[in-house]
Image 1: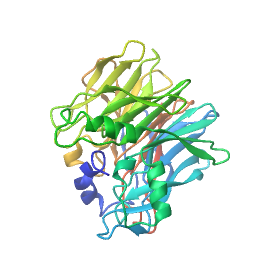
Image 2: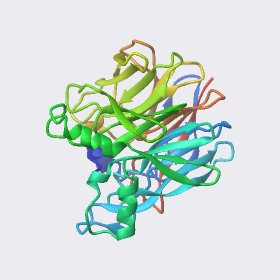
Image 3: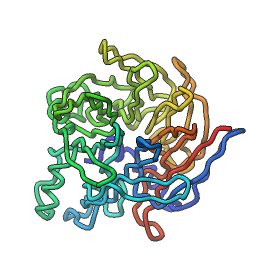
Length: 374
């Protein structure tokens, strides 16, 4: 269930186990300021700006107290969507009780990993799919919740906390990939919907397991639109999606294990023509992306050393010029950065320690940092 994005990070977590909870060290170039604005987040992933300029984060959670007989998989309702007050440094969970799956110590967590606003509504995407829910060994209510949520696109009202599922993306992609096993031999069927972009009349989702771009209609119907070609090793693992100033979609990829630094691509997809093209190359392990207020494209790199050598202090935020092969370093020295969002004031926000044990010294260790370019 947690392979592809997170199972590829075993070495990273083994390295991090002794240092999780340390300060969010970062190396910034001249004219760049980095500040941790909130901490104590539970495996924070994607970030989004709400209609009033507020900052929200998807917390994938840490599983729960109900575990499989061998203790390797724990399930609970610890995933959430959280609102952050960037000035006061406070946080408030506004959507609660979403299913999270993790290891016994809260590592390898999956839950709500991607979020996107459309008006006053927030859309979240739950990773995995109903096809991989364990058939037994867990309380019946928890199994029902997992089958009803995993892989689903979720609509939520952040003011009331109400939410409902609106499309079975993971289920559709699992079936699609089972019919296209030749595309990623030895890994399909698979599904891990991970990034979401909500637009009027359509919701776009990238699936990091099926390596697809999916179109979700307002009525919840899911259609696979494109498959992302494999890099030199393993598969593409698309993780983030954003609409550009030209109305095209821009997608960043993590790439699976075995790929050297520089193997990741930013793809450009034109919905009106269906054309998929490489827009930028030379990136490494992209986990979040988006456009800043200045129209420039940014990406978070989980580790500039690649997944196989990921370690604390090797993450980065880079600026990606159009049609380039050499991203420009903005901030280095980050610890497993995840999601990205650009504030209306020009600040950049990134989730740090996006994958970590849930309890190291007393509680969750994730944080969000603010990057200001003077």
